[in-house]
Length: 192
Image 1 (cartoon, rainbow, N blue to C red):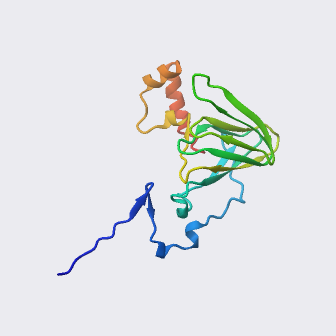
Image 2 (cartoon, rainbow, N blue to C red):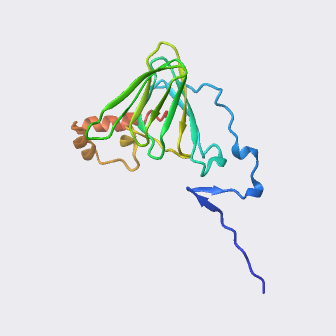
Image 3 (cartoon, rainbow, N blue to C red):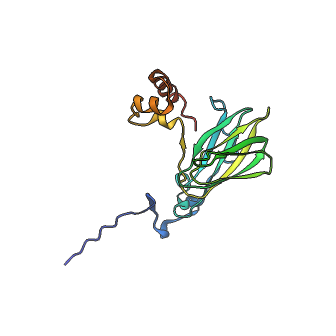
């Protein structure tokens, strides 16, 4: 009697685990963080991520990183990482950074950082970085997940399908025309 064996890929965290016999150095390698990202956009910033999507070998390791480039007065807008704490190191320039604690206090915890300074953004809290200088700035962020995720305010206006205009108008206490405008504008800039 002939028995057929079907081999199905094993998924961990939604990513395929490679057969250990087929693993090679390329599964653990990324090149290019030495190159500045293009900050010629409406935000004046660029985030180059290195996570499980770029390095398959990061799967299950619980770490990732990013290089963030800032033009003068560029911003990495308020956002959150639902699956990771972030630790940011300023490499060049000066950044105004901060995060907001959860309600009911909603306190802004902020600091001005210079080259060599480090700041931690707790998992799930809204945080930002702003280059308050007249020169470019560069930072490196380490995140406590191989796939930290990122949610920004603009995502409220870019969902698919779109959130009902009445919901957003009521939540933000603005006219529906403002929401229509924001939904049109947010679709024009998918930088970060």
